Image (cartoon, rainbow over all chains, first blue to last red; front, side):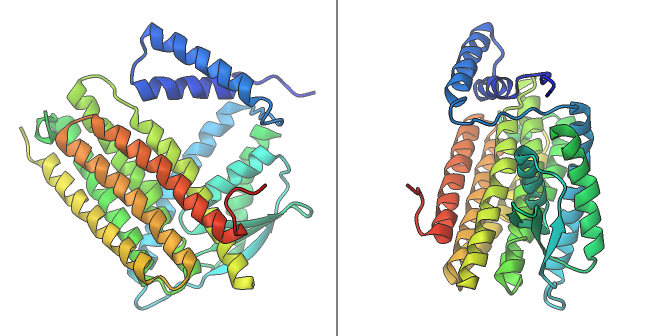
Length: 162
Length: 103
Length: 93
């Protein structure tokens, strides 16, 4: 038995997008945006048979902060590698990480987080064995990457989506 | 109404963010030239599209809010769009490169 | 009236133009097709940031819409190119 979500994600997101595009919160735009958001939600329900039910949104806030900190940190690391590239070319490499998460929305979020952080790119996912292939720019400490992905990203995502 | 009319409290952080964003983006694009193989190069432009674009968009929000004297946050749309879309392209390119180097 | 923000805008503008030149060199030189698509991806993001810079410099909100459109269509273009490299066609039956 799944819990009902606190907010319907897609209509609220669409309404916020409409208001941001028009750059106003006048009552007319609120009504028009709400009507459009509901219409699009109804129309798109047939296209996406698998709705996302995110829960425990307070976990998401912590996750967003972790991701922001990691983005800043890895930006500096990648910048240092590029500036020092004439002396020392980084050792690139693939690595495999076994995952526990099965939820497709959680996996999609994990893919965006990993690829959005400079220095790591999601390179593939084996759906049968649930193994993630990760490409790393500076592959020195494999265990540290496994720890980062599993504990920093995967555990909160599992709490949110499963 | 131009950039020199922005009050100082907004101009200082905005200028700092612009300088940071410009430097990050130029270093990221420099990586396209300096790194030797494709698998290393694919990591470089992510710098410009995450933190570089983020800095510039926050600075743009600060400057236009200070000019209009009300919060103007529609640059958030571009931020969200870039954050969602640039990983998709990077992932597809990575898979394309793996596929092409295999065959 | 202060000069610090116009100065920063010009500095960032120079940075983005330089970044676009780097991407253009990789676009013209790049040994493999995926290098060129990657360079194109970088090029449109830098172009979008340049437009935003012009918007801050002019203090006008009109540039925002152009930047949004460049971001949208650049994503569609580079994703279609990457998909073509991966599968040999863009829209599969």
